[in-house]
Length: 316
Image (cartoon, rainbow, N blue to C red; front, side, top):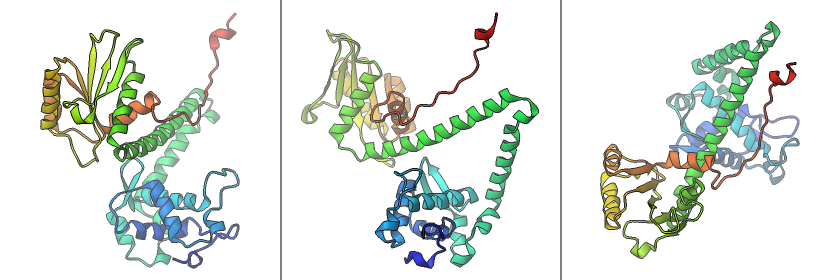
């Protein structure tokens, strides 16, 4: 696709974000679910931009590629308008409405068209109501406005971390089995299961007897946690036989506690069986949430301090 066929910005010669909406819809028309970062990257590559434009960074944020950011804006507006769906954190696919829009000429898929869609109108109405609620300082209600700001920051932080968790889960699902086994042991150690003088080990894959990792919580090994780690894709659901097998492995070593960790999900029968056997289950979503909570495989990008007045300090 020749980028010069699109509406270009007079400032830098790049396609405007609104002209990219038909390109995004066409890109997703024959795909199921795609990570947003991949959409931004792939669509930018479709435009056949010269290197200086393809790699042009933002003046304010040198790490941000301008054209990929513009694709991201197009994705955002299409999603708000209902032309795209978000089945999981950071993942998008074209909706039935989006497929209908592809019947139109590219010149008809405009800002005005997307903004006239019912879903977009409802979104704008909600923003207006939120702005009205937030505009409380002029009415002398500063504390309520402060809470609105805090809530919005919290929502944005949660949304950002959810996208990080989604990408983290994808990396785990594509990792090597031995790496994944070491990782879950590190996570449990970070959570405090090893104790101050305990030990940990990964069992040999050729002779693990159904147990992938062992954590001794004290020097004598009188309190031990046995681990099974399964690195599966989302569609490979852990079923009851896997829980039965793990329970058999625990029985052979006379264990009274075990943790079964997977990057996918557990069936309902697997969950009920694990409860009967006192086996703790951790699925992919719980796993990435714990990794963020205990900072395993991630690091804090930005720390914000929100202050409030200490009224007691000023009392006589």
